[in-house]
Amino acid sequence: MTTIMEGKAVAAHLSEKIKKALSESDKHGISPKVAFVRVGERSDSISYERAAIKRFEKFSIETEQYHFPDDVSARSFLSKFREINEDYSINGILLLQPLPEHIDMKRVEELMNPIKDIDGMTPFNLGQVVTDDENRLEPCTPAGVMEMLEFYDIPLKGKDVVVVGASEVVGKPLSLLFMNRDATVTTCNAYTNDLAGKCRQADIIVSAAGVINLIGADHVKEGAVVVDVGINFNDAGKMVGDVDYDAVRDKTSYITPVPGGVGAITTTVLAYHLMMATDYQKEPVLFLER
Ligand code: NAD
Image (spheres, rainbow, N blue to C red):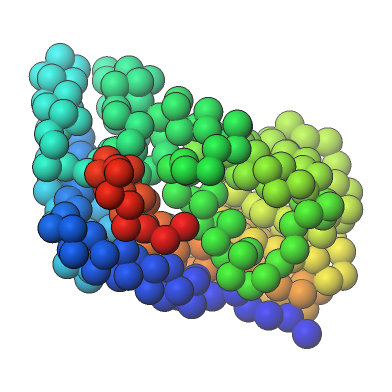
């Protein structure tokens, strides 16, 4: 029998932890605040920002928004970004990506204070994924995948995992998170030979390629766990993942839908990371149960 892994259930579980942390932080007179930083008017960035703000507001967490026009000079953007970064009242920063080409993303990543980096994108936080540090802010989407697998009690130790996609934001850090849990990981990319053959060996497949119907029945062994991170829009404008869901579902033991799977967890992970970030900043006052 196949279990459909619902992002909503995972988000609800994480929300309870956030509420508990908020009530503890309140006892210490601490009110976390998050800043959203966006350059330009990309519709995908705007809708992600809206969804994240809505999530934070549900927890009554204060938000501040900093919007810059597409043609803002790199110098004035970086100068304002520095101010936000150094503002003691701001505990977490979410930088909407991508930035326009004339602003060097690497520069911004290096500038951002890692303990405010709730999206886990700075070199320091990515490095902590490599070294498997306990108190780290992980990139949100990979963290959401791990939360999903943990919530559904999927064992990872000794399992064969195929991660399809090797980007810096999803595939690479996710592969490392699996390695940290003693799984054996194969990370595939657009040039991988015999993707279907590699996937067929896997106990767990996570697809984060951004290609409609990339993973079909031929890629999945009987009883495998399939997690679909992909967000694509088909010709009819409907949101779909990378996995041919109807063809694959009955072969799997666990599968995520799109929408309603991993995507439904990300903004809650962000809110959880804000609590972690605030907690670190206020040490030795520790209010988060880990
Ligand atoms: P990206 O374009 O940066 O990277 C895609 C990766 O997939 C690359 O490593 C590429 O080599 C690989 N790839 C492309 N075609 C392939 C193929 N045919 N076979 C094997 N590998 C292939 O994308 P990204 O930012 O990592 O995002 C990946 C997908 O995840 C996108 O659909 C994106 O919208 C989605 N996404 C979802 C969430 C979420 O919250 N659910 C968050 C971030 C990204």
